[in-house]
Image 1 (cartoon, protein in one colour):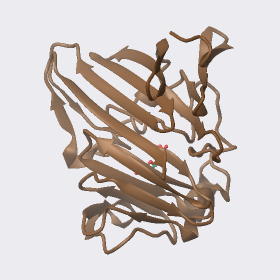
Image 2: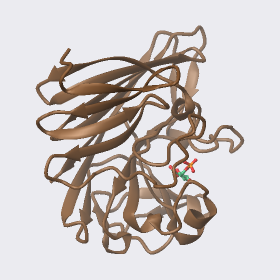
Image 3: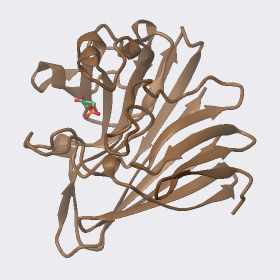
Image 4: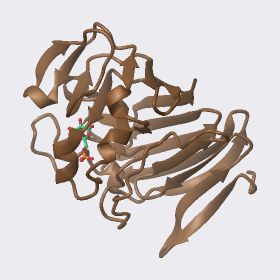
Length: 277
Ligand code: BG6
């Protein structure tokens, strides 16, 4: 344990945030949802986007950073589950501790709920590495959808392109779930809400921000790409009307038909790495 590389910010009932400051980066994780809200390699602009309108009321999900969606995605496969994206992002997680590791500072969080134990490791260094282990500690098999719902900061979405998913089929949620094949790079000219039916390394080219980001996933069968566009952004109370121009979500997910069934005693792992390249 290195008490120089992290500090605890206290809330009403105990620690509320873990702040990290090491030789590579600064960052922050809220215990509400174990939501990573900041990661900024030294000498770089913030890599994660966080809405200036996020409620931070200890109740609503945090709008930005990396919310964890689980045990269902959106409204679930039958379209009727509440709360949206499941309870993991709304729950108070326990901070287990943080260690210095070769890659930077590794903070660990746990949550037990509904027969599941979630163990989440966040390593912040030159790279952001997030890894979630889901273990079934109950008596029944559980069907799970999940996503590491990463919001990336970009300079101007109209000039952003994503490569790595060319030729991959996706479910277009803006077109009633129609399946479409990706033709070339992904670009943005309005609401974009897609569940790609495979995961692949995605490079985010952001000329206005003057950089590229590499997003790598493990244990995920889907990549979700989301930008609300102007109308949806304006309709969301926790999303600034113009903020959609400065973010894009690239999510590691197992969603829709790619849910998995976890037997009692079984563990499934999903992970994502983000780096400036
Ligand atoms: C994305 C979904 O992952 O999250 C979108 O594909 C959804 O459909 C978006 O609108 C944001 O969800 P929420 O619940 O955080 O507003």
